[in-house]
Length: 234
Image 1 (cartoon, rainbow, N blue to C red):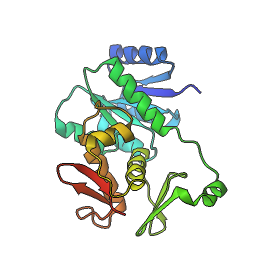
Image 2: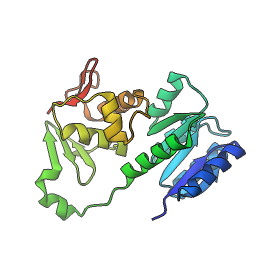
Image 3: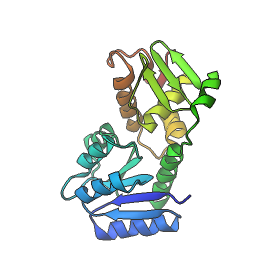
C-alpha cells in the first residue's frame, strides 16, 4: 500500500525537493507551505507521516506539532536549521517522534522515514484473539501492558500513549532488569543505528514517566542506571 507523507515546509524549493525525492522512493506526497494549512491537512488528509519544518508562517512548527498531538499520534519528524539543543528538546517534548537538523543527507532522511513508518504500521488484533493469548499481557504493580493491542492501563484506566512511547515501554518491559544504553534503545526502538540524537531517548523516557509513574521524579518502573542507560523494574 502506498504510504502518504505530508510535507509542511514554507520554502518552495525545499518542499519541491523533498516531494520529488519522496516520490522517487515510492511515497505519495502532499504539501503545505504554512502552519495553518499544514495543521488542517494533518488532521483531515490522514497522512502516514509528517515532515514538519519549525520556521513556518502563521503557526510555527512547535505549535503545529502540539495541536496535532492533541488529536493524532501520526509520526512527526521535525526539520529545522536550528542547532540549539533547547530547540531540539522542545520539539520532542511537544510530541515529535524525531528531529533532523538541516542540512541532512537523503540517505539519513530516508532511514528516518522508513524507521518511523515501520514502527507505525500496526495491524489491529481482534480482542478475542488477544484475550486468548496470555503471553501478550505484562503486569507490573498497577501497570498492565498489552503488547498485541498496543494498550497500557494504569489502575485499570487506559493511558493516552504515543506509539513511540509504547514501543519503548514494551521493549524495556519484555526484558525486565536488563540495562540498555541510549544508543541500543535508538537502534532497537527507533529503528536506526547511530543516526539519532541520544537526547531523543531521554525526552521520551521523561514523557513516558509522566504518564505511568505516580511520581516521575522517583520512578518505580523505568529506572535510570547512571552513566549506562535505562531498565524496566518489574
